Length: 265
Image (cartoon, rainbow, N blue to C red):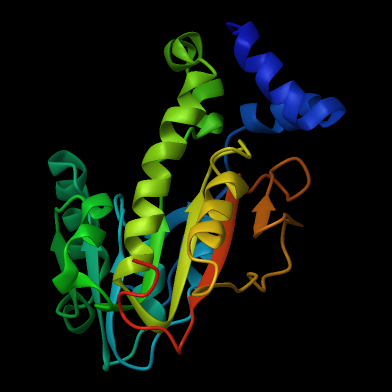
């Protein structure tokens, strides 16, 4: 297996002596579990993804947004907890990934559930600039594109191309997605920011920006699942101590009920 010394130095600097056992766990095959709740057929996914999606506090009624929905596992988890007063907008900007998302939804959902989810393909990072979208959603999941080090370390080409600029570049995109989501969240609504990254830059670093920019209206709402470890702004599940599941970082926010739909703008 190829070694990228910059990659090794970066993550050893973040995790110290823990990096060696963490690295070993990342090289092992991720343990997927069959998710069956409310589905026509089971869907296989990492249990950490189930925990991330279940962390969203669903509104009593109205529309929920899965901002970066492909391949669709977290959308299925959200739909399993929704009732007849709620609808889901499953968004995926990439056409190829959106086709995969539609296929997953069509194959795994009974007709009644399938009619309550719509698929879209807009740039979720640009949505916040549209004033008519402010306060549109009662709950939002931002499962942001990230470094996904577990895939990188298992792929020689991806590992050889990795540089320390990658987490910085991704963090800028992640912040654009999270900030836009917050602006389109209605007062009192719940917002989940999740990644499968190890980098603090992509996890707490991005979450901290939301608190800093929207300090009056972005209320930290710590995820309440017991798995993983507490961080400054959320929880992170790491495979070296969690039975092989993860990595998965989850930060949960609530929009100040006293704010306006465009609060913080």
